[in-house]
Amino acid sequence: MKKLIGVVVLAIALFAVVMGCSKGGGSNVVSNVVSNDNDLVTGVIGANGGTLTTPSGNTSLDVPVGALSGNIVISVSQNESSDTIGPPQIVYSFYPDGLTFNTPATVTFKYNPDYLPSGADETNLKVAYESNGQWIPVLESTVNTVNHSVSAPITHFSGNGVVYYDPLGAIEGDFNGVVVYSNNHSAPTPITNLYYSVDDPHYLYHEGPAHYENGYVTGEEWQCVEYVSRYYWLVYNYNVLLTPGLNDATNFWDTAIQRGLKTYLNEDTTLGGSKPNQGDIVVFEKKDNAGNVIAGHIAIVRQITADNVYVAHQNWSLNSKDANTQLNYHNSTNYLETFNNDKSAYKVIGWLRLGGIDPGGIGDISFSLIWSWSNSSRVSGPDIDLWVEDPLGQTLSSSRDGYGLGPTPEGGIIDYDDQGGNDPCMGNPWCDGGGPERAYWPNGQSLSGTYIYGVRYFAGDGTVDYTINVYKNSSLISTRTGALISPGEKITVDTITK
Image (spheres, helix red, strand yellow):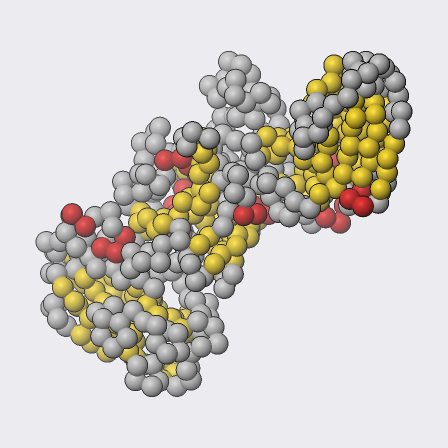
C-alpha cells in the first residue's frame, strides 16, 4: 500500500449507522434505554452535555457542555462485523450517523490485553475512526494501562475503534530471512511536504528514506513495494523495480511484463491460469465510485493451504500480523479473497511470478520442472514439457499424452503448461518460457507405489538446462538436473517411491 497507513482493529470497533435527530432545548441525558441485547444504550443529550455507557461498561461517550446545540437522541449498540479492513471484530454502532460536535466529545473503550500481539506495548493503542474502508488513528489518544482503556476526543460520529500498531521500524517477523518492518508514521506531514494532500486531512501520507541492500535501492522505508523489492533481491537476486515514478503499487500489474513478471488473474481457471505459488506477488487495488484506481498494495505469498493463502507484507496492520497475514482461498474456483473478504475496499487483481522459479511442494507428492535455454531463435525459448506416470501407469503430461493436464481418477493434475514461444506470445503467461510446470496429487489422493517422471523437448530450438524437484508435502526429497539438445527428445529422469 503506497503512502497510506493501514491499521487493524484488535479489540472494539464502532461503526456509524443512520438515525434521525430530535430538536429541543439543552439538557443532560433526559432518558436512558438500556438492554443487554447488543449491549444497547440510548439517551437524549442536549446543550448541557451528558454521558452514555453501554451495559457492559465496555464503551462510553462523554459529551461536554455546549458540544451540542439541542437535544439529540444518541444510541450505542454492538454489531457483529464491519466492512473495514482487518480481522473479524466486535463492532458498535453510534447513532446518528454524521453527528458533529461544537467542541470535541470523548469516547472511551475498554480492551482486553490478552488480544494484543505477543510483547505488544499497550501504550501504542489508539482510538481510530473508519474512513473509506481504512482505520485512521486519532493521534491524541490516551491509554490507561491500569483500567485497560483507551480514550480520545472526537468531533463527529464515524466508525471508531481501538487499534494497535508498532513503532516505525519495529521488526514484525520475517519470511525466508527477509525482515518485515512496521511503517508507522505517527507524526503529521507538513503542508510543505511533497506528499501532503488535502485529501489526507489526518496527515498519514509520508515520505520515507530510501533503503539499500548491498548498494541496491529496494524502495522507500517501509512501504509494501520496498518489502517485495527487497524480498526478490535477497531471495532471487532479481530486481523488480523500474525507473523512478513507476514503482508505485498501483502500477505493478500493468507494468508486469516490463518487470519480467508473469501475470495470473484471480479466479482464472483456464489453461493460462495458475494457482498462487510461494514467492508470488499478490496485487491488490482500490477504486473510487467512478472506477478510478486510487490506491494499491502488494504482498509476498509465503504459504498455501487447502483453504488459505498466507502473505508477508509491510504497511498494512503495522504489527506482527504483517509477517503472516491469512487470506481465504477457494481452490475449486482459484479465487483469492481480499483482507477479511472486504468487498468495499481492496480487491485482489491476481498474482505475479518470476519465470523459472520453483513454486515448491503442494499436495501429497509433487514434481516441479523449471529450465533455462541458450542459442534459441525464439524470444521465449523452446517448449519443454513435464510428464509423470503414477503407480497404475496413468500418465500426466503437458504434451497432452495420457491424461494430459489431468485430472487422473485420483485427482492428479499439472497446474501449468509453459509453451515458450516467439515475441507475439510474450505477455501470455503460458508462453513466457522457463516454467515452472508442476504435477501434483492433492492431500490424501495420491497412490502408494513408484512414480516415473521425465521431461520432453516438445518444440523450438536451442540448448536447454532443466531441473526437476520432487516434494512430499512441502519437503524437498529429490533434485535432478540435465540437458536437452534436440526437439522431440523425451527422457526418463528418475523414479520415486511413495
